[in-house]
Image (cartoon, rainbow, N blue to C red; front, side, top):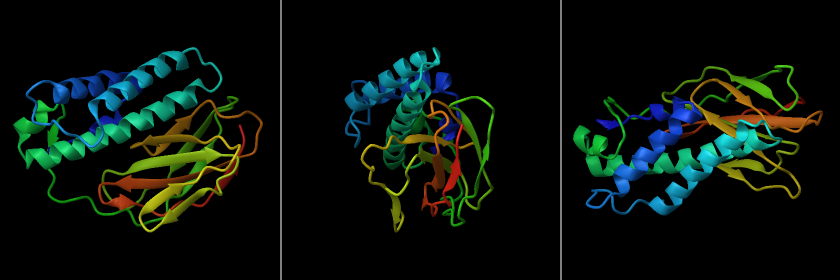
Length: 217
């Protein structure tokens, strides 16, 4: 048994209490999970930030959706780290996995690495500052689709299996991650030439970067 990663498919409103419960279960006195790589203080702060940015995003204030997506991604990286930690401690024990607040699932093998280059398409919803993306099907299991949008993506490179973001001065980056192939991003600059790329990730590693596509909204 392994930690089930279907929390990635939850809506933000569902993720917040789910993540909070994982934090509370794992950090309680006497827990078997006393020394995660990402501390519980940091994780709890990230969950609080996600909660507050989600509330702000409901006002549709400029840039609020982007801030929420960033907070969501930060939380997911931490939860993924905790899930890996639980897997290392549980050694396949369903009860130990569930004691951490996660669900358990059976896997016959580690998912295969995604080797294809992602292909992304833009779908303009005719709303200023919003763009929908769709990623073509790829090989590999349990894929997470990662979008990066900016006016300049020259700082995004790949070295081996690692995707590297070296921010270009004066450029704001907008990111989103989802297990769904259709991703909507809001809070983007209006009537501004933008560029997008995508890469996919599963437990075995990252795919190569997609080709960069231009768009505006």
